[in-house]
Length: 185
Image (cartoon, rainbow, N blue to C red; front, side, top):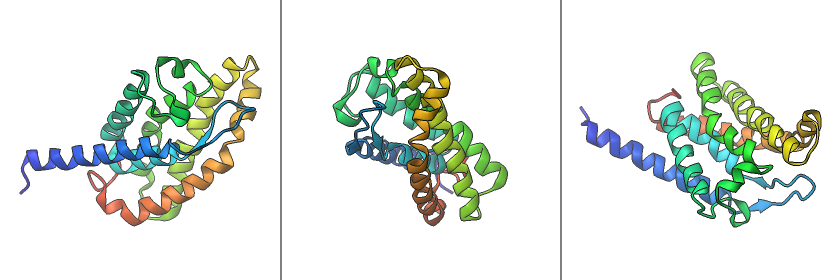
């Protein structure tokens, strides 16, 4: 039987790995000047973080990433960081990052992760849709537009994020035996 210390070291190692992946995945960005929020791979890695680490450890890992951002470490696309990022068009997306595990993990737990399509559904709902819906609020507010306009601006990202969900679901299905508990919690 494994000791608690061995288990904790494995979890901490996985958390550190996903934290590094989240940081690196934001370094390459495609700017979208009309909207003010770039296209990045971070939300794909966020989905995988929630799936592999579960609700508890995934949220803690994403929270550590956001804590670094809010402390001013320039690890968002374009070398951005600081608390002001929360009060920008990107703010809602960042909140969506933190909360997406609370959508993805219960879906995976309820419907299971035994098929690609179930995993894909969880990632589309919790990643592609949920994050963009939350992002639409700050897009609307900081561009002085209606919520409807904010939703339309965020809708620009949905097809791209569904593509990321497809890739994330393939990765998760192939590697799900390496989740923290064997299933998303």
